[in-house]
Amino acid sequence: MPTGQRHRIPTSRFSRRNRDRGSSVVEFVITMPGLLLAVLLTVQVGLCQHARHVALAAAQEGARAAREYNGTAEAGRRRAEDYLAGLAPSLLRPREVTAERTATVATVRVRGRVTSVLPWLAVSVAETSSGPVERFVPSP
Image 1 (spheres, rainbow, N blue to C red):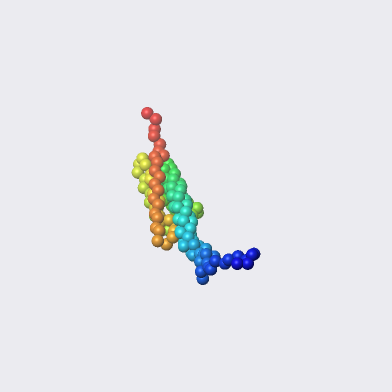
Image 2 (cartoon, rainbow, N blue to C red):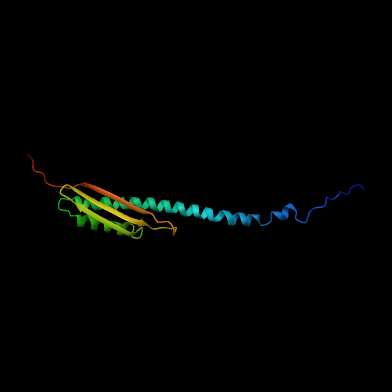
């Protein structure tokens, strides 16, 4: 062998460099749906928590109206409906607001299905608020 010449090792038709060609596209196609699902689930959990807080706030607002001295259960229900319509009109669909008032306690319940970013996931929330009715009690 002459000096300065290297002996070449025969390489196969598919060298290591060519075998890895396109692997990043395959990795992207495999991992992207999982990553997208994780992001959408995170958004959905956030929407559910927000919906719970909105439903509770609406129930509390309705209970305040129903507890008033001359308040009624219907006034509490309307106030809760108005609160939901003003704060988050499309967050809970369909929704149901019920109110009841006895001589001593007023209660408002808000139920509904949370708007979903994932079509196969249906989450419902239900929150209740109640409190004593304001009334005149004569001194003994």
